[in-house]
Structure formats: structure tokens, C-alpha cells
Amino acid sequence: MQEALNAIEKGSLKKKISDIRVGDTVRVHQRIKEGKKERVQIFEGLVISYRRSGGIGAIITVRKVASGIGVEKSWFVHSPSVEKIQITKRSKVRQAVLSYMRLRSGKSARMTEQGFDKNIANESDERTTAQLAKEEQAQVDSKAKPVANEDELNRVEESTDTLAKQENKRASKDDATGDEAPKDKTVDEQINTDGEDEAQLPAKEFKAGVDKAEK
Image (cartoon, rainbow, N blue to C red):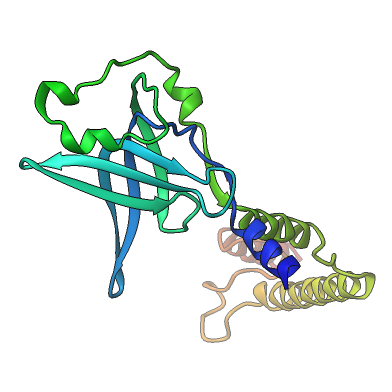
């Protein structure tokens, strides 16, 4: 039973999450479904607690002050509904839980900011191990698609030859009937089937008359 739970837990872990620390000011992007619609809600505040950061049960608690009222929300960082967590500021702290911030406001709630590399701290991959496995399997399946066998290729070639023969047959038929003179025209209007045009016909008739007269 424990092995099955461990397998489920391992498959739900995100590949890499942001380098979140207590004292960070973060923007939590949470995916919210409302009926058939889906939107992303952003909650920005100070991380006052980060518990069980090594496994699926990792939880952060973020606090902000809105209209003079303190608001706190907690998330499982590996939850599918958490799209990403973006770190915007890092402050120097000495305690693992900043519960004292609940009693402070105004200048007393200000914290000493420290420099950090935002790009490195915000490097993350929100895909879970199960999602990565599915993507890898999809790539393997796409590469293993069967190639058309020899019989299929031969059938394609045979069908191409048949179409070519039909085209040649139609072309031969058109050539055989294309040079015939139309029967509904006079002799002078008909085109010579030997390839001579209409202009040659009167000249031939005149020559035939001259040859007859000489005889």
C-alpha cells in the first residue's frame, strides 16, 4: 500500500519549482475553473511560512494587506491548480516562520531587501513526472509509426500506370479525330486532311485546269 502511495506521490511531483524562501515576496498564479470557463488569479504577498518543502506536501503561506486588512492564503506548491510562483523580491530574515508579521503594519512591517538573481530563482518546470512520461511515450509512438509496405507501394505505382495509360488512350483518340474535315462545310471551307490549309486549295484547282487545257 505504501509503495502505491509513493508511486502516486512521485508521479504528481513537479519537475522543478522556483527557489522559494521565507521572506520572499511572490506572485502566485492559480488556475480557477468557473463552470466551463477557466481563468488565472494572481495573489501577491509575503511568504511567511514554507513547510515540508521536500515532498508532495510542500505548503507555502502568503500574506498581504488589502484595504488595511491582513489576508493569508496557503497552497500546495505541487498542486496542478498552481500554474507558477514568481519571486519578485527577497528580504533578509532570521526566522523560519514570520508569524510576527501579523502584528506589524506600516513602517514596522518593512523588511531589509537583499539582492538575488531573479532568473535563476524563478527557473521552474511545472510539468509533473507523469506528464513528462506521457510526452516521452508520445514521442516514441510518433517515431514508431509503420511505414507503407511493399505491396502498398506497388498498388500506388500500379494505379499511377493505369491513369497514364488512360490519358494516352484519350490523347490518341483526340489525335485520330482532330484532323478530319467537318462534313457540314463546303469543299472550299474544308481544311485539307494532309496538313494543307485552305489557301492551297484554289492554287491546286487552277493548276489542274491549266494541265487539262494543255492536254
